[in-house]
Amino acid sequence: MYDVIIVGAGIAGLTAALYSARQNLKTLVISADLGGQLLLASEIQNYPGFIKVKGFELIKKVEEQARLYGAEFIFDRVTGLEEVNGKFKVKTTMGEYEALALILAFGKTPREMGIPGEKELKGRGVSYCAICDAPLFKNCSVALVGWGEAGLEAALILKDIVKKLYWIFPGAKPVRDQQMLRFVLDSGKVELMPFSEAVEVKGEKKVEYLVVKNKKTGDVRELKVDGIFVEMGYEAKTDFVKGFVELSEKGEVKINKLGRTSRKGVFAAGDVTDMPYKQAVISAGQGAIAALSAYNYVMELKGKKVEMQADWKHLKISEEEEKKRLFHSSKVNL
Ligand SMILES: Cc1cc2nc3c(=O)[nH]c(=O)nc-3n(C[C@H](O)[C@H](O)[C@H](O)COP(=O)(O)OP(=O)(O)OC[C@H]3O[C@@H](n4cnc5c(N)ncnc54)[C@H](O)[C@@H]3O)c2cc1C
Image 1: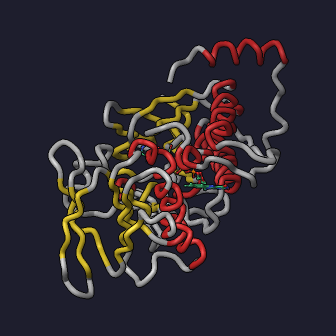
Image 2 (image 1 turned 60 degrees about the vertical axis):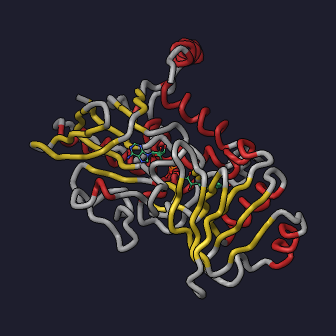
């Protein structure tokens, strides 16, 4: 039985783990990956303390810090949450874990097209990250479904790598910035497909065709492509917590200023919450708030009357102890 289980190892979950473990709570982080969205951020320039830092570098530092204080990690997907007699059961694809308190920090994931063939060919030609996967499609034909800033960023990356790029978007123009659009089109490799929507992904073992419909004319085209990049922004995938905690109209987990959700003992932090500003430093701050609130909750459950207001009062560990713990944590494989 854990004191606290944290769902998600993005910057919010990792910071919550650091704070929770530092209070000596038995802390488990369960996450589908290590790092979340920051893995996609090639360079962050607005995280305090760093002029610039790679997303993965920042994440590794916070992970190491959390392990140093004893946080444990399991890499698996959470599929369901349940409350039984005031304790919480966390179900994953491979197991079941119990805790006195939960912190939901499972962030946002790329929005999907929701069309036939997409799920089946995910990772086999269908990608949600041009920064990560574009190099795999050198000299290939690919389609880009996306618009706005995310779409433009993907187009800028792809135009230099692929042989042919079909750019599918629902309006007359994919982006407002006409100068940047011209820059993309100057490559001579990009075919704009306005007023269009993707309707089906076809392929046996990998992507072979994307079926696209023109919403104005009704014309349907089968594009022969090797890859499809979906860049339609991010959404909180909160289906598995529907009915367990209250959600906003946007499907985000509602919290108060102490990081409490509608269910006692369940806290939340980061991009998955209804906090409007989706930024790394804000997610980290919310992770700290949720962990301190979880600590107070667990102590109350255990009949110990302590109201933790700040973490800096915690005993500092010696340099020698730090070296010992770092050595131990570096031996833990992911
Ligand atoms: C390309 C890009 C660049 C960015 N650049 C910046 C920037 O420069 N500065 C800035 O401040 N912000 C930036 N952001 C925003 C910032 O990355 C996010 O606000 C922040 O990372 C959110 O952190 P989070 O921990 O709340 O969620 P996430 O980072 O989304 O992490 C959620 C974690 O939960 C896991 N998870 C999801 N569902 C489940 C499940 N069912 N079971 C188990 N685990 C699950 C995921 O695998 C992930 O590890 C950027 C975002 C992107 C996409």
